Image (cartoon, rainbow, N blue to C red; front, side, top):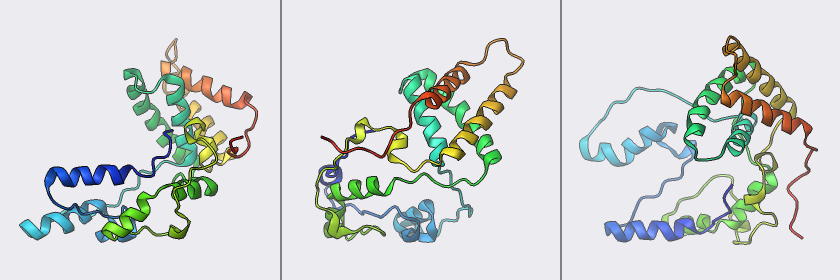
Amino acid sequence: MRPIDGERLQREIPTVEGGFGRRVTVCAYERDQLFGGDVVNDFLERFVRPVVGEVSVPTMRLNESLSSEAASVLYRYARNAGIGSEVLQEDLVILREGIAKAEAEVGAVAPATLKTEVADAIRAATTDLLWLRDRYGTVFGGVDYAAVDGRSPDFDISEASFDDLFNVDRARLARLEGALLRESVEAWRELERLPRFLRRLSRIVARRARRPRRGPVGART
């Protein structure tokens, strides 16, 4: 987890504008503000059709958001395996496929959501929100702009775990891990040695089961 940088766009966008010698168009990445509720159609409508005319694309609706529980498994696996390793990328593809099957077995998938206090702290620290509103008229729904003051949160996101920051259903997480391990064992039951990623996954599941429950993200002292 990277530390909050609430002024990144204020640094980067002017640099891009300076390089191209013109003002950029800034769009809110929110479904209800996109043409047709789709990012591809929105891009075509804003930037392609005015120049070349109508462009037809197949209508499709995909939502590949991970549940908090699935993302928790992936995050802990990546931390255990070593982020950036070549092995990790191959393993994660296999793990994502296994998670998709396990999610279907467990059911009730919902996109990952930040804990309310974490989301509020991130928004308050992100003065980019005010800058985008004032310079480009870009406004995001559900944001209390009066609360954005650039203050740093009273906890260190870079030291937090995924489960510290996101709403995770512990019961569903346990069911998902069980389904994932059953799926993995079933797939490779004829091998004398389980694949590296399954051995790692087994270790992190066991480690989480032994670890004491953590409370909410704590304040710095």
